[in-house]
Length: 184
Image 1 (cartoon, rainbow, N blue to C red):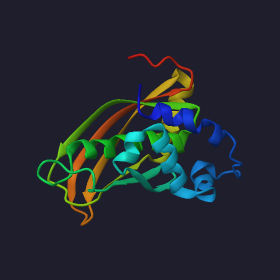
Image 2 (image 1 turned 120 degrees about the vertical axis):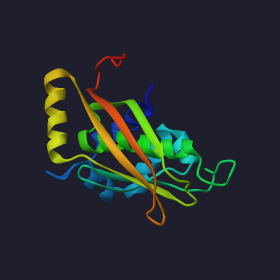
Image 3 (image 1 turned 30 degrees about the vertical axis):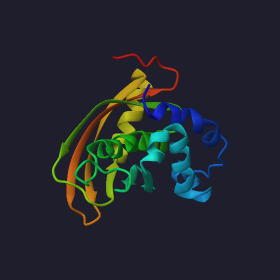
């Protein structure tokens, strides 16, 4: 089961009961109702590993999410950030971005994630992902027409000095809630 599926189930009731102001969406509602702390608690409830390794969403906006992971508790045998922690940092935000952009009626499924590790990280690391309005519209249209759509997210993972430590390229499929999620 994908990591984001439990998040969707745990948060569906919350999101459906938000009183959204016209034209504001989930990002505005989250900020108004408790901010990133609430979002990070929901993520931690759905994916306990995210809380254990210090994963946090630190910024959101229309078609945008920024996440961070600290060095503490995520070191490897040489005292730098463990590659698996960087992988988690690159993987979880795609589901979060999908949830914020498309809502709980859609389920993102990670199909592939490639990491290129460029240098060691000795501090907190952040990553940012963006979906242009045009790409989000394309995804919505394709899901409406075919029940699913594919999209890619590329990330640059940077340490606290802004140095590039890794790159990620993820392929996702997004489906309407209730579609069979077998391998296709």
